[in-house]
Image 1 (cartoon, rainbow, N blue to C red):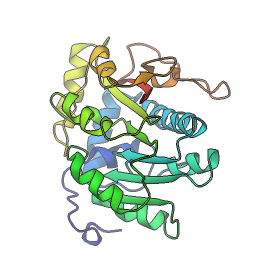
Image 2: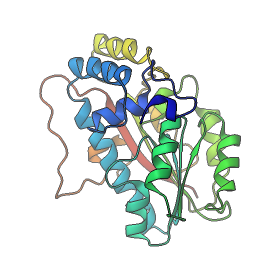
Image 3: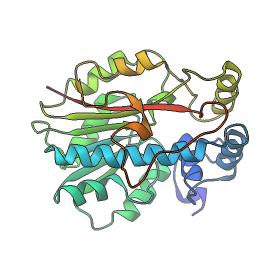
Length: 268
């Protein structure tokens, strides 16, 4: 696919979704994305492992939510399709589950629609999660989500690209969720990292369509305000209900970058 085939796509500036695709060995990225991602990988070779662990957390969290009775999912900042996507996990655990993917990169819409052609239980929309009203408007327009029923809201490895105080943004999403809904969230943290490594990562991501805004563990835990955290609470992604058959990574040397904390909260 050429950039001309995707209206509104700027390939001259790297985008975190396409960099993430590159970390996962995907093919839906461009030269600027690969250059920025390679810069990160030279400084932080653990990044590929971190990206895979984020995906693994998403799958475990989705299965947990589906097993708990959730039958509809809204994935904010979903990124490009890759192996064992959310809708596949949810529908495998609970057949008939519906999923709406949301991303602000137009290439996600193109590839998502191609992947999901003929799948009436899953949809992809282009919207910015910083505009909750527009997200909900488009999501409900798909006809796949019932606001009166429990919903699984996923924000996996996306909020660290959003600047500022997130309290109001989180409330605008959580206040619309029916009791029994779940929030699955993973967020990069600079806690325990060398300040120079943090500055290096920030300088690279400032060149992208989004900056990088790492937050402390207490700030990340506060994003779950209004929910009841499921065990084991907010922990590194690979420590959240790990699969015994797939142990988490073992890092040597300095702490992994970016440290990513994750959790799942239940809306009472």
